[in-house]
Length: 99
Image (tube, rainbow, N blue to C red; front, top):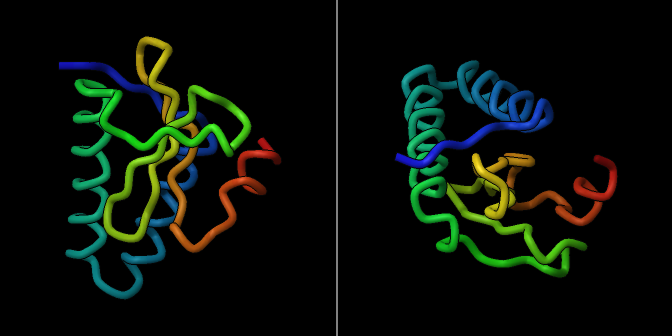
């Protein structure tokens, strides 16, 4: 099984997503968190399956959707590095520019 790591920003993103959903539906919060983690494990095993996003300023940045959230990651380093986990309606360019 491939390995992955989360940046501090990505860890914070996952906590905020989980907390936001938890306030409305605790079982859905668990499900979303589990599905995000499962997707990250799968991306670590198959890093090329995400969509390349050179428009985000880096040829190594890829994106994978889970529900309405985007896992933004770098496939090149080992372990795979999850940069951010954000809602798909947010401006990825601006978010990544501020990191």
